[in-house]
Image (cartoon, rainbow, N blue to C red; front, side, top):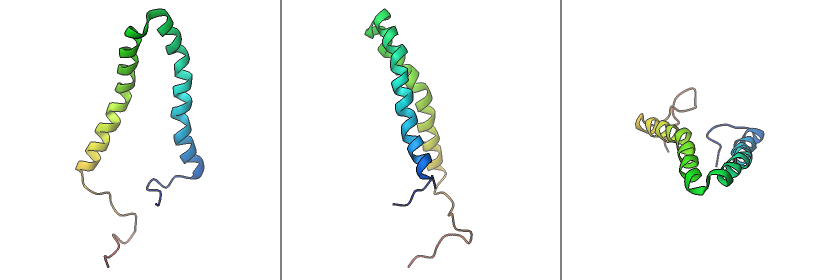
Length: 82
């Protein structure tokens, strides 16, 4: 399957690696706060903190789908159907 975002191999690997690294590093302070305040307090806080940045991404995708198909990358317009 052709890459619709036209990313290089490095950009694709970075796209996969960054969330993993951020999640791993985020576990350190969250773990310390969980030891101090308990899981019943931290679970809803961490859940709310992760929903805030992810929700706009879902809404942006829904808005893009409502606009219709993306324009063709061909300079002369869409390719003719066979």
